[in-house]
Length: 309
Image (cartoon, rainbow, N blue to C red; front, side, top):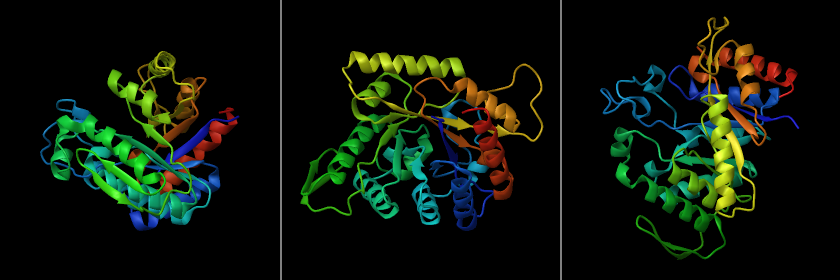
């Protein structure tokens, strides 16, 4: 069976979101992409309290100056498509009120006929946490755990009841319910976060930073699952932040997923270990507009399938 391929939707500052998101979503589904994805950035601090990903002095990319809301973007894609799954990679859960986030995802799943996949994480931006004013950064793990609890309660049978640190739900009817159980994937790297994947999630969403690193991480997660007695499998969707160039990258120090469409596909093949079920290809950052994004997405998809992926 061919590996599943998903495409990141155009949310960044260079796109006309009302026109381009539905357009790219339709084109991607017609090409054969099996899933469509959105990410979350809520502000572009000037100056930022910290560098990109929390790395000192690493600048935030200019394309982050305006990033469309992920759930609004996914709703636009849902209305323009029929089959493709609709994923978040990722929603920063502690930037949201857990109950409201659970209801939004449930409504979108019901409206789309059961196509939502909830990829969530804790993020890294102190400025975004301060702007959201839901909880301090230091409480991010506890907020994520409560969000998972609230998902289970709100998406489950009525009457819904829950009491946590942020959320109190009196016994209530809460609808609409999802069309089916919404799969929850977690972005995780550290030991505690990986235990949460094993104990509480349907899947894992690592970032592709090298084939050997991915293989090691996946092997370690499988070992952890065995240690903790998990019997059901863990789905894996690898997030690929590609930097496309119309000309091949020359030299021996090419970063993973940087270069031509053919080079991106070479890296996909290298990362396609047994157990990896899906790749999310985010090509939007290096495209000038939606037309180029659709063209590059078509090239990569065609080459990947021709290569047997």
